[in-house]
Image 1 (cartoon, rainbow, N blue to C red):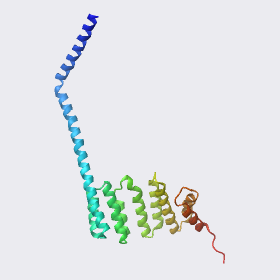
Image 2 (image 1 turned 30 degrees about the vertical axis):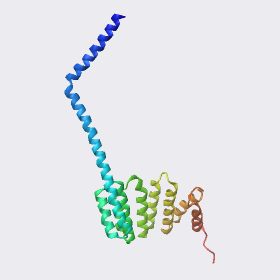
Image 3 (image 1 turned 180 degrees about the horizontal axis):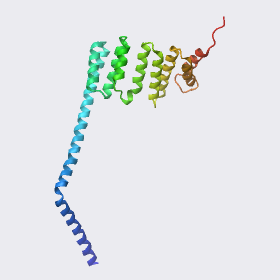
Image 4 (image 1 turned 120 degrees about the horizontal axis):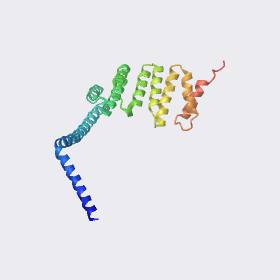
Length: 219
């Protein structure tokens, strides 16, 4: 028993000595490794702080632009919104600024300018459906109803978890198809909604479908 205990203690001491010897021999490599790890942590913290500051700055700039827009000062709002887009493109604020700028152009009857903003804009993942729907509104303003309908359908395709929003875009598409003279596509959308009792547009769908398939009055 004594010999075994002595042997075990000797083995542990030998292992500790080996570890210390290895550490001494590789002290430079260990030091470099620790420095790299520490630097990576510092860089991550600084990057996060920079990201937070950038997001705060973007939201503040967007807030100023929204205020100008709400006050009806469209020239100033457009200048502010373009500044947000150029400085914070790719951010949620930049995405929102693109949509608001497009709306400002639409209000002035400048559908082409609004559509250009949306085409050049960088939609955030949560704004993709709204981007497509705004494009649809732009094409409707230009009376290009077939293109509008396709954009509304694209908007609906981007929605995965909000039935009301999805059906609203599909209803917009059906109306645009009707205006474009494509009653077959409009009827297809309305028919699906009319059969869906859970759709908030079910009642309207039945009315619209009836209008589309009604036989012409006999004179």
